[in-house]
Every structure is written in structure tokens, then in C-alpha cells.
Length: 238
Ligand code: CTP
Ligand code: MG
Image 1 (tube, rainbow, N blue to C red):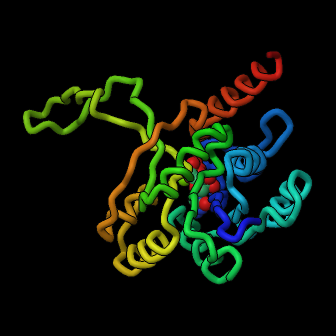
Image 2 (tube, helix red, strand yellow):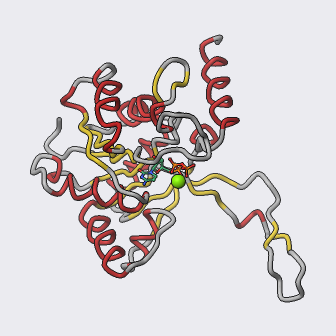
């Protein structure tokens, strides 16, 4: 590992209620490999040096087994998560803070295990933007659907100008000290966050956007898992 490691937190502590099934979503297989293994692989391929995987404590041995079958132990560790994504992220950040080797790095990425097929070039883009001085970096894509906003004062819905909208993805990249303090402050203030860049904004930090990718699509429902299988089968078939 370089003197200034790039560390990524992969939040994988959710149960995947909308996907269904007996296993946590991040342990489900795509093309024979666990969702969390795909996500970790793509982060490492994009320039991440070490991955902290936040897992449900009830399934930690299965996560350890899946990760150790794919990667050397010097590249990853697991920590137990919390009941909300926001809590899982904070526990990951605190684990980095307690480890002098990991805490030596300025760049930290936060990624949803549920986005297993993120292209490595998106990961690299995020890392480079933080290295260039950004405090918070968010990969985004244009919105494909026409979007209507409900609750117009007239009682009707209205179409939003799609050209001004962007869908937010992960990994999001941060200055480590800033995001660690921001998450601690959001928790102390009882603020609910829908993503991590919002935590930075809560403490006055500016968010930079970089181009994401359709392949970073989040696996939420069974059709998303089928989509991911089909994408990888298409790649294998050349
Ligand atoms: N996550 C987490 N800890 C939680 C809840 C979610 O680490 N307490 C993680 C999930 O594992 C996932 C990411 O946050 O990688 C995005 O959450 P989502 O897609 O909503 O996953 P789940 O919460 O597992 O799914 P569901 O909401 O359908 O139960
Ligand atoms: Mg959820």
C-alpha cells in the first residue's frame, strides 16, 4: 500500500427487503460471484488500495468467506454495520479513523455494494477529482425518463425540465477528515441523509460532479439482478 492509501467503504449491511430471498443482497450471486465481490473488485481495479466492507453482523462469517476467496486479506476487512445506511457509513468512517495506517490517507470513497458493476474508470474519475482538491465528489448521469413533480399548488402534476436533472450514483469521494466530521455532526444534529455528499453540504462543503455510468445502476428488485446477469453474460460472449 502506498504511503497515502485510497480507502473505500463498501456499505453492504442492508438486508435487501425489496429484492427478497433468504440472503442479504450483497451476498447474492451474479455470474457466480457475490455482489459484494463484484463491487470490491471494481473499486480495486479503479485505483482503491484498501476496502472496508460494512456488513450485517448476523452474516459476517459469510462475507469474510466470500471476500477471502476472492482477494488477499491485506486488501480488505469487514466491520459490522447499523440499522440505517447512514449509521453503517459512520461505523465505516470510525473504523478508518481508529486505524493509523488507513487514517494516513486523505481520499475516502463511499460505495453501495448494491452497485456491483460500477466501471473502474468511474472510480478513477472520482479519486482524481478528490486528489485535485475537491471536498466531495458525486458521479451522476442524465435522467432518461421524463419526471413529473406531484403536489403542484393547482393540484396538478408538472413536468420538470429534464435537462437540468441528474441521477446520483456511488462511489462518492471525499476529503476524509471533512466527511468523518460531517457524518458525526449529522448524527449529533439528528439530520437524515439520503446520500453522503449531503452530509458535506450540511457542514458547508461544496459538491463537485463527475460523469457516472449506466452500468453503476443499483440493484434493488429482482429485475435488476436479472439485468446484471444479462450484462455480464453479454460481456462473456464478446
Ligand atoms: N445499507 C447498509 N446498512 C443499512 C442499510 C443499507 O450498509 N442498514 C447498504 C446496503 O447494503 C446497500 C446500500 O446501503 O448496499 C444501499 O441501500 P439499499 O439499496 O436500500 O439496500 P438494502 O437496504 O439492503 O435494500 P432494501 O432497502 O430493499 O431493504
Ligand atoms: Mg434500503
